[in-house]
Image (cartoon, rainbow, N blue to C red; front, top):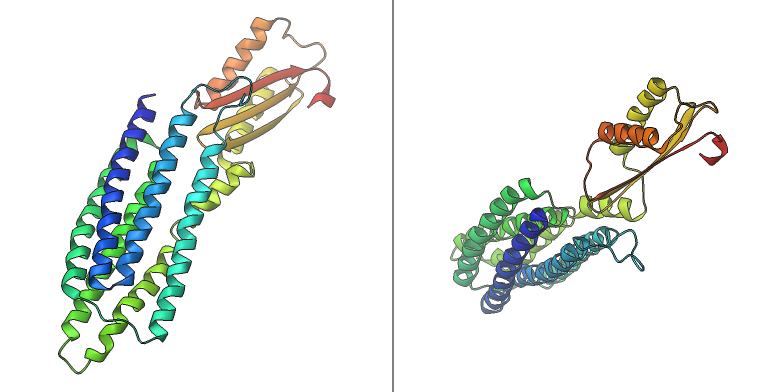
Length: 302
């Protein structure tokens, strides 16, 4: 519960700062005539909306499950939101690239570099500050939502840093024989950024889709099989079957053990003792783990 509260508090701070950055971005983008700054502001606005959604889901998954409608809890909603969040950011980058390409072909656009550089410098400091702070806090929290938020702040910091560099270079070209190139600075940097940033959420989207599709996590599967192989030898079991899945922050582990017909497991107490032994060997016990272990003398039930 403490980690959930810390996660929600950090997301609230991120939302507040992101809304401020988005508002400033749109305003300065219009004042300077820079579509790349407007893109940065819109990117931040969408990111704020996604953070609000992540906060709502974070509160939901920390609640006690509805025993009638959601008997396995709300864990499945978490990867769905992560996939939607990352997919939205990827689509935004694709749209920005198309916009930049069209502007470049139309001859670029003139900018007010004073407004543009002031914005890039100020927002860059804020974005880097939030990135390092959120990353440091998430080392204790271990939240996928905060991890995605940290990535978003890194993306924002990269955008504004690149903008500041590009605007500074273009500003130095004014009054020189290369002044005719300055209108292309804004669409060129926007195109480069959108191509680079579109790959940042890919890992999050791919991981979320593996959880939505219930693809077995290799590390957890290997751990369970290693433990059960040892248990088969130690207790003289015939064989076993295991099924594992990870959905959001929840782990689902199901183990079926085939025991000899004349098994020494002749009481519930002995069966529970073996279950406890297996659970401790697997590790990671907590409110987010669902572990089912049953014993049968009929292999057809495996």
